[in-house]
Image (tube, rainbow, N blue to C red; front, side):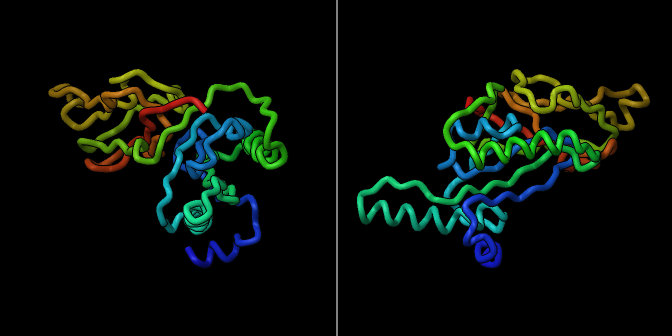
Length: 212
C-alpha cells in the first residue's frame, strides 16, 4: 500500500484498470465521491467503499488522504472533501477482446476528468455500499446454466440467476439447483467456468441499490 501511495502521490486522478470474469463494467469508488459526477462514467454500477485501510490500489491511494482530511476537519471545523479521485475499474469480460467497448469506457473516464459539473449521460446508474456487495457460491458441484442477459441489470427478489446441474439432475433422479437471492439485486459478474465445485464463487451481486 505504501509503494502504491508513493507512486500516486502527485496524481489527482488514479485508475486501477482490469477485468473480472464474465462481467458488466463496474467501479469501486470512495463514498466521498458519491455525486452526479459519477454519471460521466460509461458504467452503470458503482460500489462505494468506506474509510478503511486496504491493500487495494485505489484504497491505498485515497485512505491516507481521507484520514488526513477528516482530522483536519475535526481540528478546524472545515468540511473539506479528500482531494484524491481514485477508482478501481472492472472494465468487463477478461475472456474477450473488445476495442469498441474499451474506447467507450475510456471516453467516460476522460469525461469524468475533464468535466466536473455538466453531466450529459442520462443512463440510469446504481450504487451500493461495499457491505452490500456479495458473492453467491455453489451449493453443489456441477455444470452451470448462466443467465448472461441479466448481467448489469437490477433483478427482483428470487429471480433465477443461474442453474446448477449435478449428476443426479442430469440423470433425472433429482432437481437442478437454482441460484437466486431473496432480495432485489444487481447481477454484476459470473464465473467464466461452465463447471463448478461446491463452495466455488459463481456470481457477484449488489444489494440495497440506489440511484446515482
